[in-house]
Length: 268
Length: 268
DNA sequence: CTTGACATTGACGCAGCGTCAGGGTCCGAC
DNA sequence: GTCGGACCCTGACGCTGCGTCAATGTCAAG
Image (cartoon, rainbow over all chains, first blue to last red; front, side):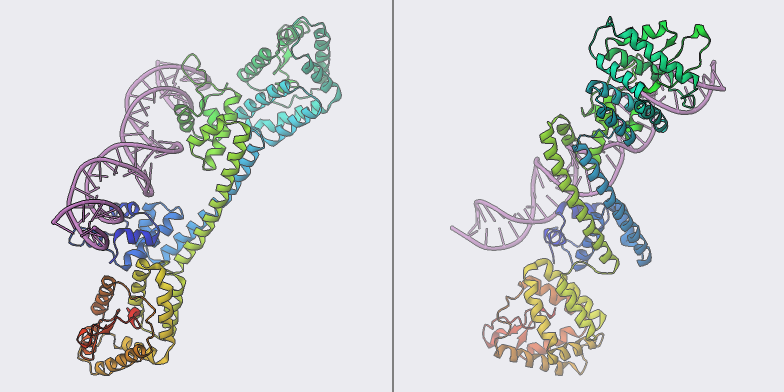
């Protein structure tokens, strides 16, 4: 008869595993010899190999126990199930391979592809890396909070960036980078911003887009202001010209309750 | 800023997992708002997705922690490693699919293919299922204890079974099945057995095969005797004719110390 | 003011064994 | 004999990666 290590060795499992199977009732305890050692017959080998085969295929031991007691029909059905599971696991693993490859390539994976495209497009237009970085972070937040509106916002932003005038404005803003709040170029930029806003308002353009929530807008504006020293001054200048906010820019209340206007909204 | 459930939801993990990552130092604890709630910025999203991607690819969290702190070069190397692992895991899963398919087809998987072939060949010759069963069990034990001698033994057995005279003898023995120990056919069968033994001895055939260990032989003989009611009588008759044992059959000592003879050995 | 959906910490539970600890047993060599 | 090394035994704790209470606090809406 076989000792436990012979059995385990031949079946390709560890001795500890065999004992575990005994403890959990998966494999019946065999006879003991006079010194208390377990002694196994051939049937144990067959059973153990069945257990191992199922277990290695990812079947939980509790299920294995059921299957060992099942009739051939149930067993066949279960095997079909297991095989399906193995197939989906294989395709999952393939997906994971692709994902880690993308990770290795430096993609964050935190953004939907259209946003990646958009950022690449902006990079192509020569936007500063720091500008792109806060743009990226903003879109991560937007995508996290409003995943199903990202497509819509993205379309608006794409249109803006493809519009030469607006793109120039953005590029000029991005170029300010570290300049001080008293930079002489700021008033002119505020004028250009307002011009586009008025034009958009006249066409009721962007009116179909729900603005982002006030809290999110505040947060994004906050990052904007913290990142660029000139930002507070720009907002001041815009305020002087009758517009308030940035992400959810809109007409200042005095001139009427001022419907929110999302056209430039997602600039951050 | 994001709450923990927004973060978790967008990154595709559970809230519990995020807290676990904090507890184990994988993801830094973020600032808390005035009521003690965690508030996350965009960077946490990026990090969490990295963690998830690696973790889902089967990287242990302890390793993930190292990788998050690694420089791009080490990271790339690690990703290569991970990818290799994923590939081998995929092929493992494919192997497991094949194995459970064989299980479902009724194979025991406890025997090397040459033994399966041998048993199929015997079935083809019309051997009784009960006979095949104990034959199978015996070979399982032999394979378990002497895996590297199975090929050799198998070759001998194959030769025996392809030898028409010996095969006839075996078939006749198998046909006795449930007959009683006083069956009149037994003496003739004993004579035929001895005839082949003498012939084999004369040619020193099978002398190149090491016999199996005495304990294993005893065990196999035991199963043989327990399974067939006529077996003890047959052994008696052989004893009368100067041969003792079955698995390791050999000349009875009185006629000389009698070198063991393995020719018919593995018949059980 | 309640209600229900969130948040917090802390604790135990789970599978499937690995890995000691603290023994006993067997077998071959000396 | 008896010594060493390789087995065997039981029992217990450890590990990963969270799930799942429990007990309590907060927030937003009705």
